[in-house]
Image (cartoon, rainbow over the protein chains, first blue to last red):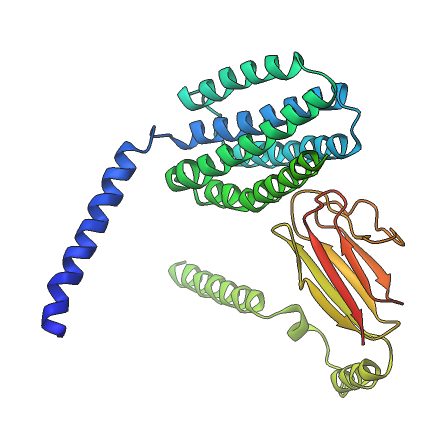
Length: 180
Length: 134
C-alpha cells in the first residue's frame, strides 16, 4: 500500500506545484513593495472619497454612520501605511493597478453623484459591498503573496479582518434596505 | 616603557570585562536586597485576589472581542483593551444602557459589572460580545 501511495502522492504534489506556478504566473501583475504601498494607499483613499460623497448626499442614519466608520478606519490604515513606508524609507510608486483603481473609482464617483435619496443610499452601499469584496480579494491574492518586506506583509495581513468587518457591516445595511 | 604599555593594556581589558559583566546583570540584581520583601508582596497578592472583586480583560483584536463571551461575578470589573489600529467602542446593545464612547488604538476602558449584558461596537456593528453575571 505504502509503495503504491508514494508515486501517487508525488504526482499529486507535482500537479499542485504546477497549478500553483501557473496560477502565480497568470494571476495578474507582479508588484514591487513600493508599488504595493501605492496600491494600499490608493485603495484606502478611494473608500475615504466614497464616504465623503455619502456624508454629503445621504440622510439615512445607518448609511451616515457606516460612511463615518469607513472614513475614520481607512484614514487610520493610510496613516499606518505611511508611517511604515517612512520608516522603511520606501516611496510609494505609481503602477498599473493603482491607475486602474483610480480610473474605476472616478467612474463610480460619477455614478454615485448622479443619484440622490434612497437610490443613492442603495447605490453607495451596493458599491461598498462590491468594492470591499474586490479589495479583500486583491489584498489576499495579490498584495500579501507578492510583498517582500515582512512588516509590509504583516500590515496587509492585519488589515484583512478590518476589511472583512466592513464588508459584513455593509451587507447588514444592504439587507436592511432590501427589507424596506 | 614596554612594560608600562602592557600593564595599561591589561588594565583596559579588565575594565572592559567588568563593564561587560555589569551590563549583563539586571537592575534587580544590582539593587540591594531586602530580606523577605519578595515573599511579603506575593503573600499580599495571594490574600487579596480571591476575596475582592476581580478584574477581567477583554482584548479587542482583529475586529473581535476576545473572549466574546465572559462570565463574571456581580461587582467584578471588565477592562476592554483595544489592540487594533482602528477606533472601537463598547456599547450595551438592547437599551444602550452604557457606552464607553470611543476607545482609540492602544487605549482601554473599564466597567464595573452589575447585570448581564449583550454588547457591541457601535462603530463596527458586526462586532458583538456578551457578559453573564454568575
